[in-house]
Amino acid sequence: GELPTPTRKYYKFCGWTTQPDGEETVGASTKPSGGSKYTLYARWEFVGAGRTRSTIASSGISNYAIDDNGELWAWGDNSYGQLGIGSLVNTYEPVKVKTDRKFVEVSSSSYACYAIDTENKLWAWGRNDGGQLGNGTTAQSTVPTEVIKIKGVSKISMKSNHAYALDMDGNIWVWGDFGESDPNTLSILVHPIPELVQSDAEFTDIDADSDHVLALDKEGHIWSFGKNDRGQLGNGTTVTERVEFKTQYTPKMIDADIRFSQIGAGLSHSLAVDIDGNLWAWGSAVNGQLGDVSADMQKKPIKINIDIPIVKVYAEGSSSYVIDEENGLWCFGLNMNKRYFGEENDRITEPIKVMEGIKLEELAGFDSFIAKDTDGNIIGWGNNNDGLIADGNYKKQFIPQNIMENKTFSQIASGDNHSLALDSNGRIWAWGKNSNGQLGDGTEELKRTPIQIMSDMEFKCIAAC
Image 1 (tube, one colour):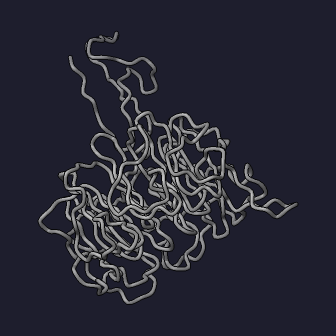
Image 2 (cartoon, one colour):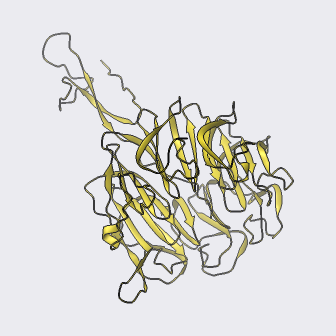
Image 3 (cartoon, one colour):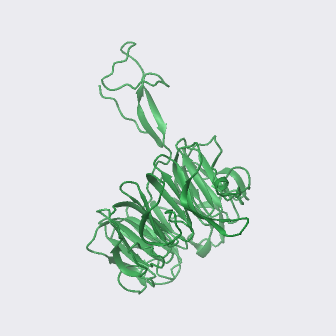
């Protein structure tokens, strides 16, 4: 008869066998020997966080959107050619990026843009003084150029003027300017050609801040490399191996006894979720970003006390945000602009649950926040100098405000001083500062309420840089 297909969180079902550790797979038409009654055992493969694509990026004053045909559009600041339109001219309305490729993901950082096409090839353009475009040169490019050597990219993470990529085989690649100096000439060393990070592990996820990197392998183990002055690597030391490029980027496994499913790298701290939904943190605790009131710097992961399983982590600067399995938001760390809904302290040293009754799916921003709930509503709070809360004024908002209550949204993106949202019909809305045309409405006028742009187009992905 027909056999069931079970499901298990963080695991892939690989079939039924007649023994707990058996290799032979039993199908619906198979009749095992041994009588009319027998037991079948499910065989599983741990997949951890999987190769999920991130469609949202934030920072700066340039914007990107992928339409339903896979074509990439850009608008806003173009100082280094980061719009990919073949010039250095700013554009105040969306224009098509100069390429015949079709894309599935776009990300950007510090005047450079990266996009993965339908063949999993990685393309980059814009600023390149540190070799961050990975094309073998340090010359900026105003049109997309293919990142060399890497065959098949599943994830890209960019920080300042260097980048990390995860390929389809689970390998990590690094390139760009990592702050090294030639000991003889003291000149800055750059690496414009991607280098393979040497490791025997097969990785499924990667997250990086400016100087340290976390990587999750297919068995659920976390590996780390890079800067470690505050214990952010979680390996029990504060030693940063910065002797040379290849030594600095040698991953080491941390706490082999714990299996993880989520990772998040902050400015000098790290967050992770294990396969049971427990939250772990390590690194700097100077602003309470570890969520443990008794903690100072932690060189190894410590478990954080939240009485409900966690499913998502966001480590932003010196602040931490986590979403639980019921879509509740918890916050701790630096409390600049009283972003924690009226809390008076400059720092929050223990996790506090905020926005009771609201179920969140996504979070974007830093000084000003926008979030999307499970019903597709957008909520904003925090600094409002440039109208980022979209409530029509400029006053800080300590209490979350609903934005465009008459619409539902599928994606959100936040830049330094403007925001984008993609509604359920594939239309883009923008608001905030507009001095570089980043809102895409053809003007330089600041907008304190959302405006629709490109009303004749339908999009499936947005990014704000």
